[in-house]
Image (cartoon, rainbow, N blue to C red; front, side, top):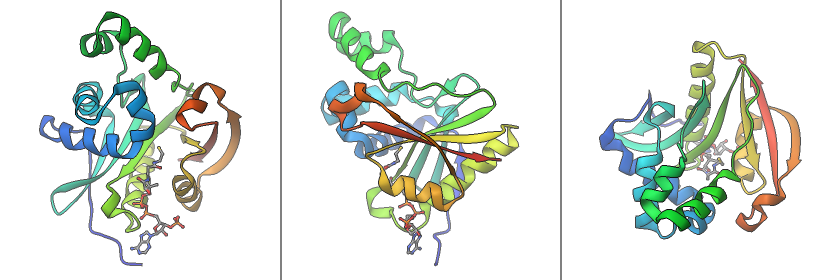
Length: 195
Ligand SMILES: CC(C)(COP(=O)(O)OP(=O)(O)OC[C@H]1O[C@@H](n2cnc3c(N)ncnc32)[C@H](O)[C@@H]1OP(=O)(O)O)[C@@H](O)C(=O)NCCC(=O)NCCS
């Protein structure tokens, strides 16, 4: 299999936030739309919520083609704080939308780094970008001294599940998650890889 020559970087420059927000929105539109509204509004919100330190990016030919959102050491890729919701949506709607967003929060065992999201540009899928990013996440966790990388895969992402299993992530458990059924998500399966 011929793999694309990718450049993998940790962190995002301010100039890359728009592209990162677009990639994230395109991939998770079904979950994002009901909470953050239509595309332009949601992307403006995401630009401000993204924590540049918690991302790994894959670039091909100078263009960002993939993005991994990480959670570690108390940092997370999307900083979903109430004041940001209130600023974007007002006092009441901001509170309602904030509560909806917190339904996605999941605990993280000590000593582990979580991969919370992996997104590859739709026209670049099936060419090894996801593989390159996932391998880079494991290397990053190892350099930072974590014991394991954990991924909670929703039932809505079978291709992602296959990719993780192929790269040596082991099945840990499946939890029912009824609170997210209106977003199409009913279970999360935890996969773990010791690093
Ligand atoms: C899941 C996702 C991240 C995978 O990214 P990707 O770049 O397509 O992944 P890869 O190309 O490395 O691997 C995908 C498949 O293509 C195959 N492949 C990879 N490179 C290839 C190449 N050069 N030629 C032919 N096939 C190739 C792999 O064997 C793999 O097969 P599999 O589906 O049987 O595992 C991507 O599909 C995506 O963004 N999906 C939507 C978002 C999502 O579900 N994210 C996870 C939830 S957080």
